[in-house]
Image 1 (cartoon, rainbow, N blue to C red):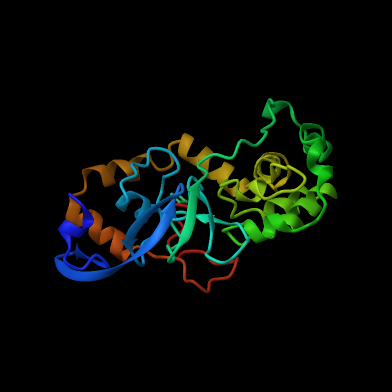
Image 2: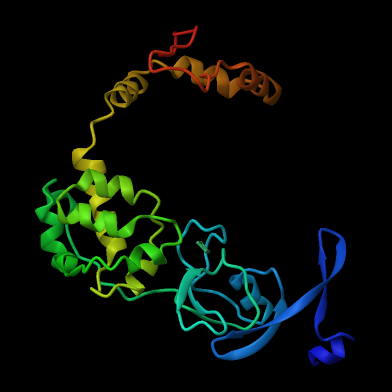
Length: 261
Ligand code: FES
């Protein structure tokens, strides 16, 4: 059945959300080169599904955190290609859209345990790092607002800690790479840098090691047994009455009951 037969007014559609029925304006968009009329306000991902696409790749969390839904689009009367996450970007009239669920970037193979913390490890695995021309196209493409080019500069200087800090919010969508003149796979380099930092540079969490030791020694066995026997109501009471660390507590804060430390 055609859209015209379904709706008296082909410029709008009826939607029902949480029991509320409303009329929504339809806007034209071009998905993979074909025109579809979709409700305005939808994300690109939802608009594609409205148009009949069944997404089995290029779709994960739907919340902007998994990086699976890279999309490339162009707005009408604009020569510029833009990139975004399909689950975050809302459709606009006459937008041209294509999905890039995977950007075929080079990812180095390595035995992580054999790597040292020296930045030369990254240089050897990703020598193309030095092809960066500092154009900043990567930073402009990043949907996470990461200073990608600055992180690449830090990596060239061998500052693994700074790369880890700058790239912490990277979701591995690959959109930086899709726009890179130097053909760098920035997101793979950053991931390696963060792994090296976490495993081989960051200070060890000694308090955590001590706590694991205490658990292994059975310090909490009796308490855990009591919890396992407690009713749901009792568990809720204990949870609600527990002493929590105040938001403004300093480093020297300790709970009143230190029996479990
Ligand atoms: S689906 Fe996960 S970031 Fe879009």
